[in-house]
Amino acid sequence: VSADDALGIHERAGPLLRDTLLGASEWFPSYSWQLVFGPPLALTALAMAAFLLRFLDRALLPWFFGAMTLFAFAVGLDFVEGIDDAFEALADGIGVRTYTVSHLSKVLEETAELAATTTLLGTFTAQLLRTLRTTRVDFTA
Image (tube, rainbow, N blue to C red):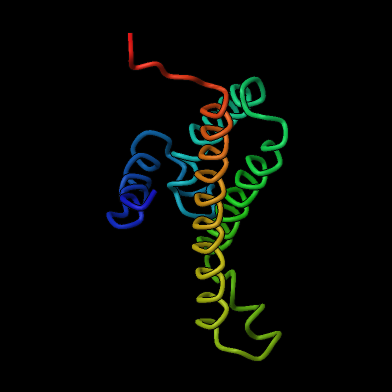
């Protein structure tokens, strides 16, 4: 995630794939990376959920689903950000500059991504520790 954020891979690859492979430049209102990378990422999340429902400790499931919810929230904010003139009406309505609303949206999106990643890694670490608690390694053999 951080490598992609630093390099902007999805922002660069999305328009190319959307326009050349999908021809969706006219009908999709937001960033093209969501159209290209969204469905595979959603399928990956569903596959993870199906796998983890079998192996993850039940007490950790709310943490996993909380992380997935935060990721979905971040993608939703990014979708709105990609719509032309999405923040103007809100900014006019509350009497601030469009930049202020846009900046707040970006901060919330990045914070949600960070919180989701941290929660997901914490969930996996907790599962690893629970598993190791019941695992014994013998180096004397």
